[in-house]
Every structure is written in C-alpha cells, then in structure tokens.
Length: 201
Image (cartoon, rainbow, N blue to C red):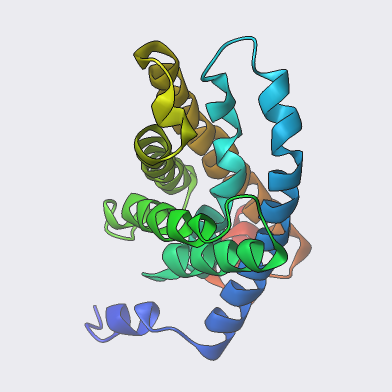
C-alpha cells in the first residue's frame, strides 16, 4: 500500500472547496426558507408539546450532505457553517444564534463521520452524521432556547424528536439526495459520483 495515498485523499482540492461552498450556499437558502415555514410547522405539531423537534432536521442536512459529497475531514463542518451564515445573512428570527447553532451542528455532523474514522461514506456514515447532528441541536434547544422553558415531559419529547429528525431528514435524506445527484453525473469529479456509477454498471 502506498502510504502517501491516505494523506493525499484527505487533502482538499480547489474543486472540493468550491463545491462545498456551493452546497453550503444552496443549503443556506433552504435553511432560510425552512425558517420562514417553521411557524406553520410548529403550529401544526402543537397538539403534542415538544413534537416540533421533528422539524430540526431541516437545518441539519447541509453538513451531512457536504460530508457525503466531498468525503474529506472538515467537509461536514465547513458546509454547515456556510449554510448557517447564508441563512443568517438572508435574515432569520434567530439572528446571530443561527450562526452559533450552525457551528455546534456542524461539529455534530463532523463527529458522526469522524467516529467512523472517515471510512464510511455510505448509509451508515450518513446515519451516524445525522444522529450526532440531531444530538447537538437537541442539547442546544433543550438547554438554551425557548424549549428550555417547557416542562420536563415536552422537553424530553423534543429531545428525542430532534434526534429522530436528524437521523431521518439529515441522515437518510442527505444520503438519498447525494445518490440522486451522483446519478446525474454532476459529481463525476468526486469519489461519491464514481462509486455511484460503478454500482449502476
């Protein structure tokens, strides 16, 4: 085995930075739109206090998707940060908190890949990243947002709903989206695109 190959695979190329930034910007617009729709989602789920945690994954998918596409250490964190910054710049009701949440959520998504030693970019990696991203926002929201004022029961419901949302929306959703993008050929310069083509051959 060529020992120099491992560091080379983890070195960022210009195309990695550009594509991660593009994914982050596009995701940031989605984050912003998700925030505009959030009051309606929250009202629809108000029949069970705390169930609005199911919406959390809508702000978590950028990190997971960026990691799955770029497949380099730091990609999940970078993409989530860019998305949070764009969302904040467009204007949200949470203002600067949007960026702070993005930092922690990006760390969570990154941990999900790191714990697998950056060696699994398939569904398991996506689920792990989505899980840790969900855990990060569940902890943040139940300790430092308006959710913290809820009784212990609704806060517990919110916590587990946010984690589930991270797994399903951010994890499975990003995995499915990455596969769909790879199938179009737009990821041909990345291992994520080449793996998809080999699987279809």
